[in-house]
Structures are given as structure tokens and as C-alpha cells.
Length: 161
Image 1 (cartoon, rainbow, N blue to C red):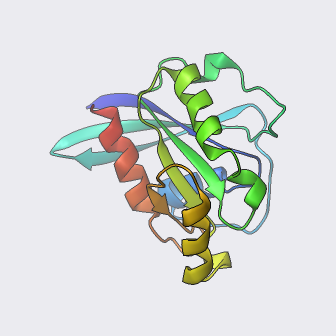
Image 2 (image 1 turned 90 degrees about the vertical axis):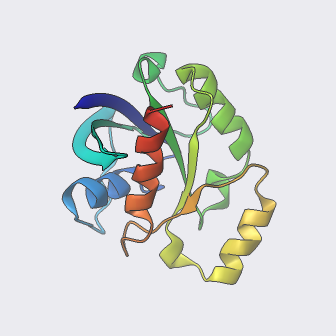
């Protein structure tokens, strides 16, 4: 088995912790508890007959003017940038935000995930996707457990590249 460090980053309140809780513990809570600093969870996944222990770093959400310590990004094998499809400020300048994560982590590819799909209808989501200047890998709902497993499978696959 191999262990791989993966990061979940994005603005505060986009659902990073909820995605991790849904994936690791199969739980969801409406209660919002802000992550301070970083919280690490782990889960073993199987991909292409390979067992990978994902060490999932839940990096505290930020406002645009806050800087995340570079040390959090060191040694990461993959990263997921999460935004909230119902909050425009979390996906404005998405391309720039993802570029910053690439720069800090040294990763070439970042998985981009829009969360909180359950708050909008498909027409609204499609409209938002047309306004975003980079490709979005998945739209998820931690609450309804939609595409969460798929998002982490993409992340696990990224660790092997």
C-alpha cells in the first residue's frame, strides 16, 4: 500500500469538510464548524488494483486576501479546489485561484469541483459552468452524496501520475 497526501482547498464555507466527512465517514451534518489551520483525515481506496491510503488535508478556507501557509502544500500528490455553486464569490477568478494552488504545490493538474449542487437546478448550474473560465471536473453534493466518491476517485487517480 502507498500513502499519498492530497489537499482540499477553497474559500471558507464551500463544503470541503463536508465532502471529506461524506467520503471518509459516510456522514453529513448541516452544522457549520470552521476549520482552523488544517485537519488531516485518511481513507484507503482501491484504484487499478492498487491500494492507496489517501491522507486528506482539509486546509482552512480563506478569503481572497488571506494567504494559506506554503508548508501545507509541500509534498502533496494531488489537490482538489472546491467552490460553492450557489456563491458567485467562490468561483469568480477561479482560474487565478487554481493557478495559485498549482504554484504553491508544484502540481500540474488540480481537480476542480463545484459543491452544493442540491441548492440549484440543472439550468442554473449549466449557466454557471458557462461563466467559469476553466473546466470543472465535477459538480457534487456532500449533502445528497452525489459524485463525492467520484471526486475522490479522480483525486486518487491524480496521485498516481
